[in-house]
Length: 435
Ligand code: B12
Ligand code: SF4
Image 1 (tube, rainbow, N blue to C red):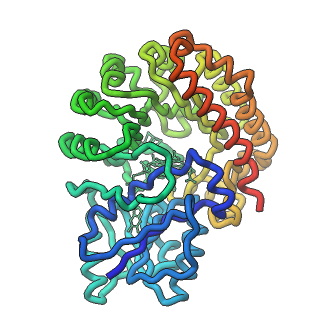
Image 2: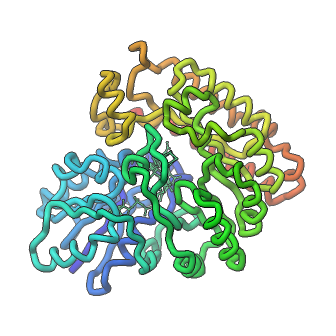
Image 3: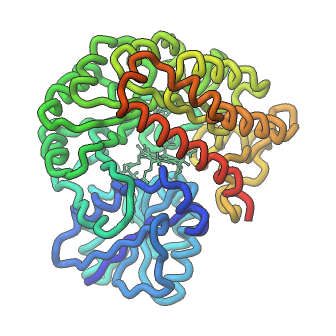
């Protein structure tokens, strides 16, 4: 029997493929490939890097769906089902709003694939396919992801790996908080080391929500991966500042940079987000400690909780002064299934209740109104300006002048390549939500 897996793009390939920084190996697909027995023939299309054929010959077609690819995923699923093909949907969006996904599929997987895939395949063989498979537990498989499924596709030279799932917090806006509901689970360190040793890429992105959530476990993991000599980046919460002794060990284990979810410099906004964990952290101090250990910072902010724009300006000044490597300023987005979505719907502030199905996808747009009823249009134009300013050549040079870093030619190369790429992508992203 043959299974085809698909990762759809957010918009038409021609636009999407411009965003090279998005073209990373999709981990969920290699996980599915890893747990699929060899008796099944596997095929995979990633619309971000290739065109999906109009007709696909397979016994089962599995599509991974995020909120930003939902519209396109449904379009593909509907078309394939019209051809008589069996379609199963899975992924974040499917798990967040299964009822919507069900309308476009023969079956859906709610939650993680590991706990249910055997059953799906058995039912497929016995022609006894169920409309829904639900995974209750966070369950890492000891079978490693099969990355040979990526063969022939042009991805960035960095491999993704996951060492924990879920998150103990439940921030109002966050899809992960809504799916895992405060639960999280670590993988065995031996399995992680085994997987890392098999990955050919030297560069690694750990996709955990917060790589230092448990300092003792983080310490053990860093120690275990030192001999592998990988160069890695990961997401961490600013609570890292409570365990500064971890930072030198992180560096020793190959950490090149960290993505920090600062979200806002405004205390009230952090409280509204339910992100109290960030209140205790001195962002400036944390950036300085990381820089002292030659670790680059990608600072991520969410704009819109504070409707006055003041916190975005404060963040901008802080980032420039501290010379951070990269920064992201995202408009607050009410993903379905999150408490934020429910609140804004109750307050009648959503512009449309299924905004993610709009064509083209409203990327970098506010899809809800301010509490006063006004639109965020003016605010969003200012947000565009802040991004442009952060990535202006003048400010790129200003941020480059970190004393320890300029001495390294490798750093100069990476800094300018990446900042120049980000500058270019930002300009084209402004057009992504226009037809
Ligand atoms: C790495 C990452 C990225 C990378 C790209 C990753 C890639 N391969 O292309 C980068 C940094 C580029 C990125 C960008 C963005 N991202 Co991102 N990203 C992640 C992150 C941290 C890890 C993804 C991952 O590999 N997870 C591990 C896999 C194994 O988990 P999984 O996908 O959930 O898969 C499991 C199940 O869902 C299920 N499953 C999944 N697919 C399928 C398919 C079938 C058929 C079946 C049966 C089961 C199944 O089984 C899997 C194993 O159990 C997640 C958060 C997270 N921890 O997951 C956010 C996340 C996916 N990103 C998110 C967002 C919003 C974005 C951006 C829109 C951000 C922005 N403002 O620009 C962009 C959009 C990029 C794009 N258009 O492609 C959101 C999506 C929310 C949602 N409701 O869909 C997430 C969940 C973050 C969050 N907490 O809100 N991202
Ligand atoms: S934003 Fe970060 S800390 Fe908050 S629930 Fe999501 S993953 Fe956890």
